[in-house]
Image (tube, rainbow, N blue to C red; front, side, top):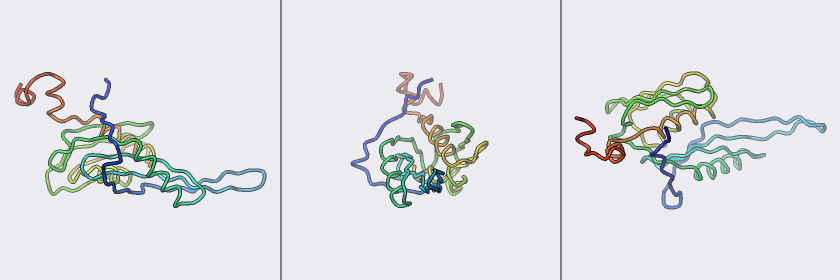
Length: 172
């Protein structure tokens, strides 16, 4: 099924907060010795339903992070957030990483691992239960979490797709 609710967002009119998920030193062995560079996974969000992630690579840490932030601002998505949590349970998958997201009552907090926590906090989710299964590679976990968030749908969008009133979504 095609994702109907992937809403691309322009980054120019929104104020973002960025979170560094992971940074790795990468070594390239050449004839002349070892060359070191850095790769950084960064998540940006406005903590109000808009989030994106990016990968930056450079010889210095600061420029790798800056490139990651620029990349993250290029692929932003809109996520439905209801009363500080997500609308329904959802699973996401990318490569070997599997994630499970479950809505939680107010006051629960963000119960999630490192890479997932960064994405969920950037979206603006205050209460959620989350479990990461399979690969713990930060790249894959961030992409699996984004995959799960892309699949979330709120009652209004479901009613529009089905062509019925919101009351019939719950009662019908």
